[in-house]
Length: 311
Ligand code: KPL
Image (cartoon, rainbow, N blue to C red; front, side):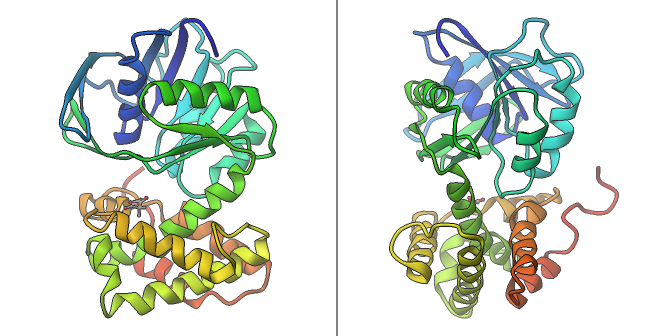
């Protein structure tokens, strides 16, 4: 990726707008950004940085059924997991073969299918950047994080390196990795231990450290660790169960004040990422004949991933 790149950001939620505004704010190296959604957002968007600065840019905005005529150098899919395949289907026929696709979804669900289906290189990204939407024209970058990028089957190293550099220069620290599959599962494990419980009990992440929640989290981590060991996913750091425990409790401490994304979705009556987060774990448990009563209970407790009557 060099020269004046054109990036399409498909899915103008908090993450999509964060990436769009950060890339667009780069003045050297020139990145042309188009924000695409099912509906057209106001073109002038403001990012409130973690340092409290306001970064306002006028972006190209359009809808997925009316994409720009100039082909992009990269397409970033930043929709929620359950909307990713429909968004890709809406655009795929308009993309020249070979257009790189970057998948930013949580969980481990649509990534293998889209990697297979897309007519070009596919990268997956996982990020700990924190952002939330604060209105039609405003997104808040709540906390700095780290983004990892790579292809599921390895390969596309130069593409991943170029994209990581672009993001990094734009103020989103990023690096290319060869083990993105493990990294996606690791983020999924953290989300599985935190999100369904905080969504069900309507609590902030930090409250998981207290009774009666702490033993519930420990029980979920134990199930997740057993399933992921059978699935051949490397524990984050340290060995086995302790590696998973250290990771989850570090994230709980680091995000103690947060309302997790799944809680925000439940409170707003939006579809949750239940299927992308718990679904792959339960499917792996079935494949390896492992009992997962805690995860199954969380799945049932969350109810349907999409509230009745919503697309
Ligand atoms: O990723 C998150 C989310 O909210 O989805 C965590 C890590 C749980 C932070 O809230």
